[in-house]
Length: 50
Image (cartoon, rainbow, N blue to C red):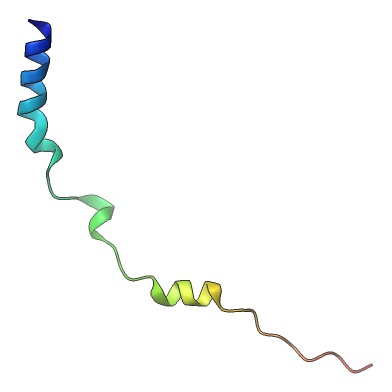
């Protein structure tokens, strides 16, 4: 009896888990430019003349 009621609740709640993403997941933007800046080697300076 308990198993069947839990199964029924799980089946009825299944559509709630299939909803469209909300919140921060919808605010994505491409990060290609930022990744390129992080991978780019630092600027090298010529050796100082003493």
